[in-house]
Image (cartoon, rainbow, N blue to C red):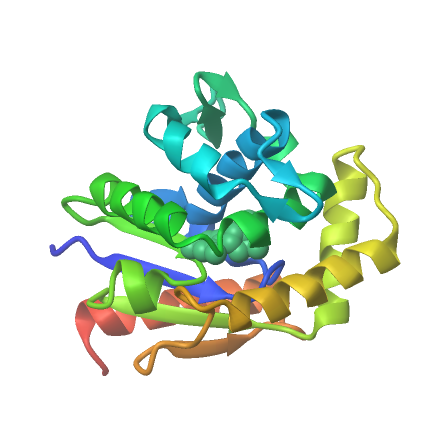
Length: 230
Ligand code: DC
């Protein structure tokens, strides 16, 4: 059976990664979190003094970019972990400081070019579910299935709030909401690869859906692609 490439794009904190992981597991595919790559690079910039007053030192980043290694490895529970130059940074890349830096870093053209190349390299042979902002529009314009996920910003902020609290990294709800709305704006307005629905993407507004309803909807979409409409 053909191994599909499935692109999951959409707004921040829409549950794209949960969705993509569920699909990958159900199909025996590889899950790739493209946002984690932008986050890892942003963490590198923060740690190495490349971010100053909300802007990035592009020449300095360009000079070191080739030497920065971003990888995914599964932990003993089979959960994908993000590694930056050999260090597991999976938790650290989710904090608010990184979330604030990442929209700046991900708007840089040469950063996107390098990470898109890496995303394509990791997907050779298919059997991949990748989530992000430009997967269906730029990374894989010929993806077999494209999903575009959306939900109201306050619903998304509440989800992120609960997720961080559960991990023991609580943040203020209003700060999270502001960060999400700010990222929505930057993601949609940036000149390079802005967040937008691909013409052939299927839209999912999951603001009022349960996980079970969403999972059923997802499998239906995949079955339609694999077996055709029936
Ligand atoms: O999916 P996420 O929230 O972890 O993504 C983090 C940031 O990275 C988000 O603000 C937008 C950016 N991003 C991007 O520009 N392109 C992608 N393919 C994935 C993420």
